[in-house]
Image (cartoon, rainbow, N blue to C red; front, side, top):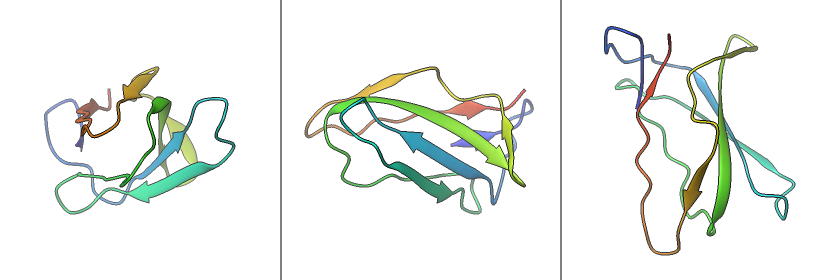
Length: 80
C-alpha cells in the first residue's frame, strides 16, 4: 500500500518495479482507490520499487526487497 505521512492512501500513483540483473524489463502499475498495487507472478529475485507521480520520481520505496518462490511480498510504502 502507498500512503502519505498521515497514512492516507495515495490513488493513481505509478509504481515501477525493476528486477535483478537477469531481468531487463521494468514493470509498471498504478495504485488503486485504496493505495494498493500488485505485481502478479514475479519470479524469485531481488527487486527495486520506484514511486512516480505525474512523471516525477518520488521518494518512499524500499531500496531493495526479495521475492521468494511461492510467497507473497507485502510492502507498505510511506511517502514523506
